[in-house]
Image 1 (cartoon, rainbow, N blue to C red):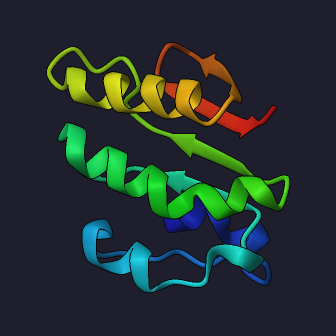
Image 2 (tube, rainbow, N blue to C red; image 1 turned 180 degrees about the horizontal axis):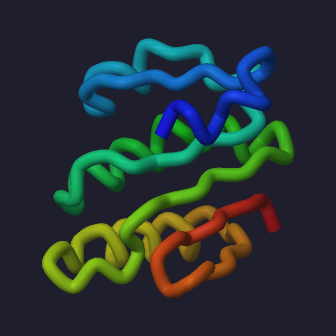
Length: 103
């Protein structure tokens, strides 16, 4: 996937690792776009969104993969709850990605 980001290499940083550990250590205040493609457990997605929330305060975007993954209904549940609880707007793209922005 990194090859797809080649033209953005000066402004994009790909971070790999366990999001349950990494996101809480990162300063999200200077980030304007997050693509979450991590664990599919409800609690993991909920955690990822919680720690990515500052991105929305910067008028940024969170894009989540596997929104309608039938084998992992916790992904959709956590995203839907986050959108509702944080009064966000969302768009489902190709029935796979959930694009989340500040309302």
